[in-house]
Length: 407
Image (cartoon, rainbow, N blue to C red; front, side):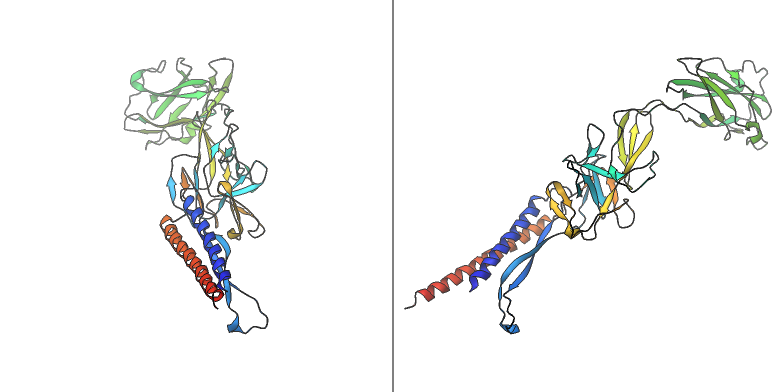
């Protein structure tokens, strides 16, 4: 009788409506992947029945599959919003120690500097050195030292690139240098505690193609370097490297304690003497004061870099991505997470942008891949199927009533 077929059709159509409703409800859920109900015919098994005599007995939902197609990527401007452009899942360590996998990249920093999701799960990554070079594939929770400043670094070298005007006259006297024949520039260096040490450099022309270097520290009087340094230039205006070999040094003193001194190398190898105005093209040093954490950035390769108030940056790790041999075998759970199962296989870890792994988009989120228009059409189709199966039961009931009312 058709009651069984109609009832199975009602149950299957109802489950299909559940799946469609779930998709529609999560049309705005970040990282959500839509699902679809897949139907299969039902037949009564009979060993001896002929092929044409085995009638169907209805339908059931064989499985609810997940559609892991790429969702649209929407820019948010929040550095800790992460989207995967391509294959892969973020790996998150939950509070109970188990691993979950997600495409929902809404992360934030907790009070301890850990990168966590909405449920407090910690984003997993690979350890790196301060320059962002990966050290191993042993994943660990990613965190940044947000509470402790990075220590100061004492200046050890000053690099200067400048042009001295070849048209300048030779100074009549070099003690002290006169403004008309002297060019100068200044820079701030740092002592071991990160305190500023003002350094001024002056250059006085003592002969054709020869300039003597003077320096002053902490606002003192300019004085020749010890031993004296004369920059000799070739006829074409390039510097004679023998005049700066070995590289000259100056001794700096801490403004807080003048007895604390330290040498600083002067790199003047890019100096020139052309017939143009004096100009400084580059002036840099390698020290810095202590820096507080001010923010972070994450590049396409997943390198997490902390930014500090002294202008320095430090890599804190690399976001890990994982893939599965059978992503359909993943078990979905609340919070936009999946859990691995025997059917999915073990997670395969890799670096963003390598092999079959997608790249990371920081400051963006992956939208749900639900096609709302298609789901509304599917809902109407499922509703019609439900009505049709209900009509099958109604018709069978009328046939049965007719049989019962026969006299």
